[in-house]
Image (cartoon, rainbow, N blue to C red; front, side, top):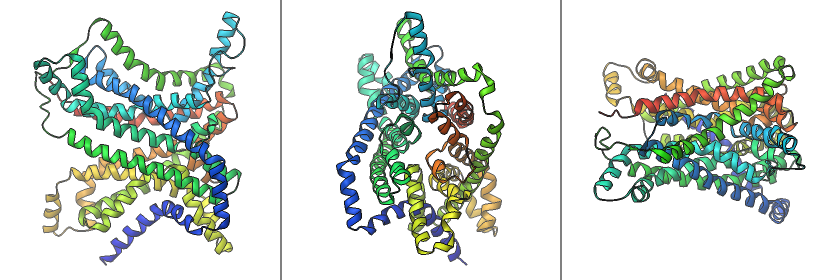
Length: 539
């Protein structure tokens, strides 16, 4: 009987790791045709995909640092009116999927958009007046203002722990403000900035909506083109492998930065010391602080929402209200199913690791935890490859129909990506449950399922709810896996928004896009509330 949980654990880890394993297994089918395809790709599209992806990632890396670091320094080191409000307002772009931001800016700034039309009509100008939004530079702009909260949040957390105290000590030693910022605050935030930048770049590599909508030749767009347009599984697998290698490099850098961040942030912060108060700003310094904090929130959230509200207020009759409820129901249904399964799997994994922290359970948890870093395009290719092999081997088995004609394949892909989100929340919940409770329960005869149901569940109820909510929101916004694996007549809000935007029906795309933004606001509000509750009180 004791072997059953171990077998279930191994099965869960294998199912969730299958896409990556299948992708690596595709290289075992190397033959002359595969070599010819790889050689042709190396001469033609692969340099373009690599150059565009790396160039876009470099621009976004610079952008998120340039936007996120000043905002984090301002709200932690300095004091000015509105600082408390900016602390959570700067998180709002997390609620905006990057592809929704891209739709909003394109609708407003394109040649036939309201801004250029107004400029031509007002000043008698002709032709294009603004640079083309649908470009690599436009995508870098969108990603920078959509993803800077990763850098801002981690840098703010790192600086809030000890920066005010150390900067005060440096002031007493005669260091000027510029030197204190340059030699005290910024070095402390460097590991956090590196970790946040790596997380933002992983989102860039995993993106599908912005790349396809802007017509940018990135790896993700190339994977779908190779699979769907060229019907070439080998080419798709090879591109997905290169993309996965880039993600692994970023993930290694992020984990290394997180380890350094824990080292830098260790020790007693003495946050309650009255000698370490933020520096009060006056005059033009205060105005500059307002500008640097207000601009990211406007560019990443407020203006895109206003751009989307414009077509809604112009003509309500063109909006697809009759079909909106169906799209919303599909999104909610898939999100709820995945959330329940993800929380169940995460709870089982976390409970197994707590009961017996041996190498097998640690390895299973680490494998599952990597799923969130795997781009949706890689997950799709990794799932469809073994399905294709099984379909060729047993044509009458109907495996392909189960995966592509039902929600099974779609939920499977969601679980591969988002069980890691639930697992992180469950492990954080278990970290707050003392092990002495397990020992006391064992002395009273409670073990196994009894321990989990009667002792752990009441203590982990809030963590489970938070995990389910995070998974639910991520599933609602997921685009690449849903586009390929959704069954017929199972369009979601994300898919419909993408289809309408690509058909240049941006006014109709505003309705499902804004619905996704409203859903995304829920975890952002919870996050800002948690950060406010953890803020140390000043005497």
